[in-house]
Length: 146
Image (tube, rainbow, N blue to C red):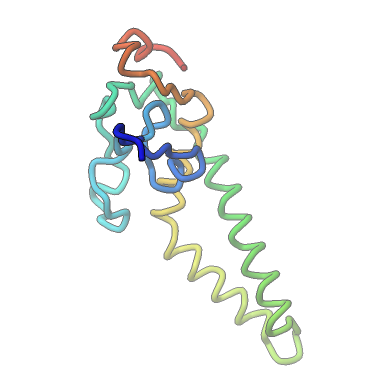
């Protein structure tokens, strides 16, 4: 057995899904953990509480998340329609296509806060690289894209 306890490495996908800082993959991107608290759902600290990485890299940085959110929404709708078609079937005769459309709209509306947060997490992960040695680097990389 090793006397030194190794720290578990967090992967890119896991850090995006759990809304963690892309640089250290430890600090939270959002101040609150509940995406359904509507007043604070998109509130982010200015810097990562762990490594100090700036979260808003430039003014209007997160405007591009609309494209990512759109892509996530289309993927969700496609998954629902494909799953419905493979399990229950789609037809105009029994109105199942309209039921599928209703369920898809309800799911999209219910998951919108989660999709918005995930879009921000994906967007910042495009521009900020993971740095295993962020503690040794100090704060010199906080003002740049990665």
